[in-house]
View 1 (spheres, rainbow, N blue to C red):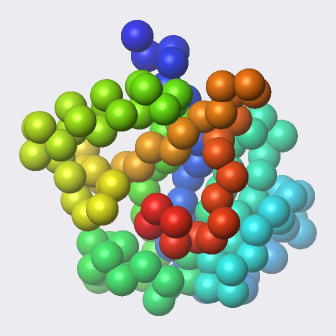
View 2 (view 1 turned 180 degrees about the vertical axis):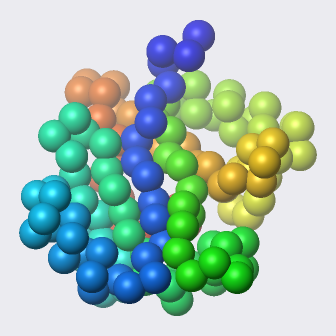
Length: 133
């Protein structure tokens, strides 16, 4: 059952956004694939993405993380369109919705699902950092 859901990405809220961007791009060597000004997305070679949010990018994450100045924003899981719909319905029925299409786990950690394209198993293309956050 668990093999049809993947971890698609990790999203961090950065206390020093420019420093974190530089670290992951220049020191770790991740490929910068999207830049929205106050959020960026890097792609690792295995297809998992790392997204960084500047502190002011996502108000809900800021509220959840206060008083921390940085930390995990949410986990992203990839699933087929059909599997995603089933998971989201199950979480809605369990009262796990946070906001929009974001959910919370038992410890209050935010999570989100992206649709994997059937032909290559990779996440669908997003047009901006606010498509689902």
